Image (cartoon, rainbow, N blue to C red; front, side):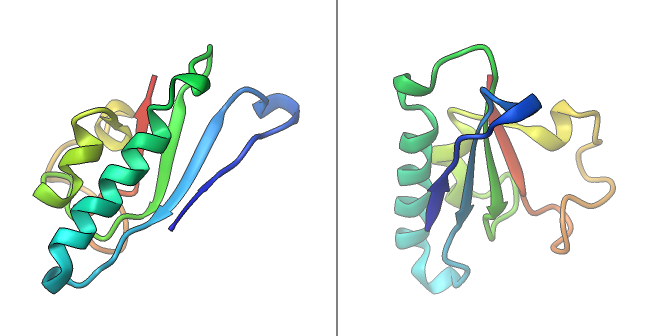
Length: 104
């Protein structure tokens, strides 16, 4: 599931997407397909502009997982971009699970 939103006020121009990918490893093919669909939404040329596109949510995979490859191939990990150290601290309740990616 993915939701695309438009913000008003001081955050106008930002284009957030909220996504939740399947969590069961038994359905990895579905998970990769879902990540690809979210990547297509986030890289839509109609969204090009001065503010970055943000994909956030319960992605149910570690940042270096092949499941997230469709997203990490076209988006930047917000955790490390924001100064978080790889392998240190928490990205979310799952330790090194991805929770936000950015397309600038």
